Amino acid sequence: MKSMKRVFLFALGCLPCTFLLAQEAPLQMKMDFEEYDPPSTLVVEEHRLTHAKFPFIDIHNHQGNMNTADLSDLVKEMDRLNMKVMNNLSGYGFRGGSDHLEKSLENIKKQFPDRFILFSNIDFSGIDDPQWTGGTVAQIERDVKQGAKGLKIYKSLGMFSKDKKGNRIHIDDPRIDPVWEKCGALGIPVLIHAADPKPFWQPIDKNNERWLELKLHPGRRHDTDPVRWETLIEEQHAMFRKHPKTKFINAHLGWYGNDLRKLGQLMDELPNMYTEIGAVIAELGRQPRAAKAFLTKYQDRVLFGKDSWVPEEYETYFRVLETEDEYFPYHKRYHAFWRMYGIGLPDDILKKIYYKNALTILPGMEKSLFPK
Ligand SMILES: [Zn+2]
Image (cartoon, rainbow, N blue to C red):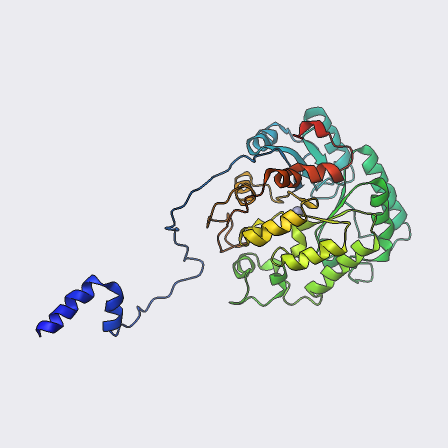
């Protein structure tokens, strides 16, 4: 009896021992994946960055009403972030109006000529028309003459755009070849978003890293699509290969941010392929050592991009790129339920990603606005 008491008292003082002694049944509790999100108890140094270390060019942004908008509030927000130049990829507006680009260029010129650039957009719906290729090439020529600095291709090419017979238009459709060639000849880059993250093609279950996103946005599902993810990606690479004199910015790390070895092989194979980090910083932030090696090796071909215009979210980008902070949260749980680690890039590489690479591949940029 006496010794039992001693064991009991000892066990109270030693938590692991209580587990050994008592045959405990676990609590009958279930917790939702969406609900379980405990605040971290880790105490480490933190560097909250609301302002980038160097002025930067956001190569991947979308603004819908640049043809008429008062841009001063937007510029104030850009200044807070240290964003020197915003590239609005939606040059034709969200509805694709033909005079949208022209009006937007005028509006920018009147208000903040150094702070915004625009990319042109093209429409694939008339691709069956024998005049389509020539007309589209002429449109690009005209847009660039007016001031467009590149061409943006939306993911609808390959996924949703169909010809008159209802056939899917392949990304490497030869009818588009002269358009890519023209971009190369004019010295403008083509920023292309093809397909979507690979998990969107996988079953929505416990093995899917984007389960929450697909639950919240079921319209993003492609798990029953007849076209495989690999097919779209292969078409895109075939198109890059066919036009070595044209510079392509493969958006969102080409959806290989989770496989930097594969992305590196592509960078080696396709010297005309550049990439940007919009919406995929969480991939780099979960592998800071591999990301640092990748960004060091390909420092001349990676550009800064963000995609959705939510100014508060830039902090995660700055923090991953600039600091060596550990285990800090990402801003959108459905992109990443994991935490971030800073890569701590040196200044010379940061400058390339933030602005130097964009200044090199965009035509006619005013370099004096940026540090050497
Ligand atoms: Zn985008």
